[in-house]
Amino acid sequence: MTSNNDKPTAIMKATLQRMPLYYNYLIDRAKDGDIYASSTSIAQSLRLTPIQVRKDLACVSQNSGKPRMGFEIITLLKDIEIILGYNNVDNAVLVGVGRLGRALLSYSGFNGYGLNIVAGFDIDEDLIGIKINGKPIMPIYKFSQLVKSLNINIGIITVSSGAAQSVCNLMVSAGIKAIWNFAPIHINIPNNVILKNENLAASLASLSKELADTF
Image (cartoon, rainbow, N blue to C red; front, side, top):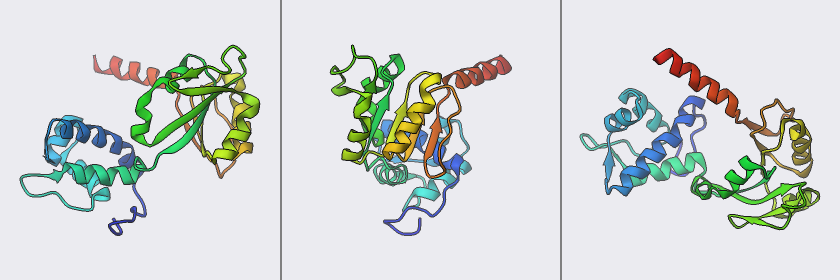
């Protein structure tokens, strides 16, 4: 850490991807009433090595662990929240209120990770005006207006492959700066927009391959 208030200048991508695992583990330990967690106990629970855990946490923690006790859980959770942005809730909008879109709108746990989906958009007139988990479903022609008025930076794509690129273009033109894409297709974005693809089919194929290799 560069200071008590600054984020580190660089964290390896693999380290960053492990942070939610540490966070969830520490949350469970805190719920159990634990005050400290050692790198060894964390490593055993997450199937990592203690050395890897110590290296990862050294990148984010403002305080080193205490001998024979480990890291103070509450302090470490706060450090990870800063790195992952969980302490700053970002508003997002979702386009495509099919089964997956509805599932994401219905999930209340995103707020705990710094994400608040404020509305869903669709072209199906039967969906317009209803609410899912308190989130209104709005017509697509109101997308740009809402994004600009609320200064929303994150867009979630849960439409079909054929509609994904046009939805992406709409998001970019409205000022969306980061896109979470669940459509199983490559979409083109400008260099100043962040794209995260979630290919469920590819993940399932990877899981099946690992299962076949293991047993």
